Amino acid sequence: MPMTRLEMHPVYDPRGALDHHVTPTTARPRSLAGLRLGILDNSKWNANKLLRASLAGLGALHGFAATNYYVKHSFSKDAAPELIGKIAAECDIVLTAIGDCGSCCSCCVRDGIALEQLGVPAAVIITTEFLRETRLTRAALGMPGLVPVVVDHPISSITEAEMAARAAQVVTQAQDVWLGAASG
Image 1 (cartoon, helix red, strand yellow):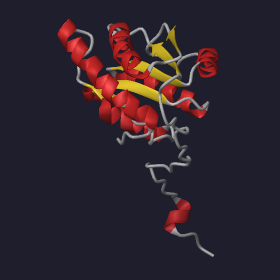
Image 2 (tube, helix red, strand yellow):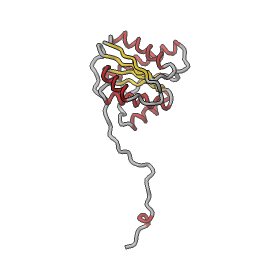
Image 3 (cartoon, helix red, strand yellow):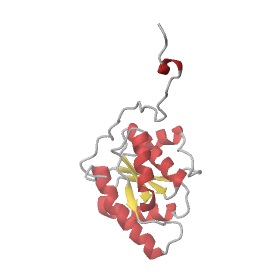
Image 4 (cartoon, one colour):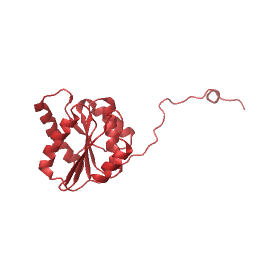
């Protein structure tokens, strides 16, 4: 039997096939009062200022039982598994920042997903300019339901008044993310 033309020259689809499952975010608390808050600073310029200003607003509203501050020393790498495990053991919810360029944005999202997979609701702060990249990263990693906290861009070169405005955005959105009231 003679071979057909396709049998002699196979044609491959360059788009490939996605083979992944969607993982939901972890269960959300009913209230933030009395929870242990973890802050994960990715060491980007002004991440510390944004996180501390956000913490001041959030702490005044919710009366956290404890606040634990962690720093990863490379914004362009995922947090070490040991650090993620320590945070998950010591905290009930986490706030992490800042995703305001390519690698730091995807690493913040990856850190948030790692914490969610360990049962810790994560609020990942990114800037408006990287919302699309964040959406793609969440989808590629199988957790499109991880809603980010989105603040105005930029972060690295802003005044104290602008930083206070960004922190106010975080306070409003982070509590909605942790409680499951946010959509995005």
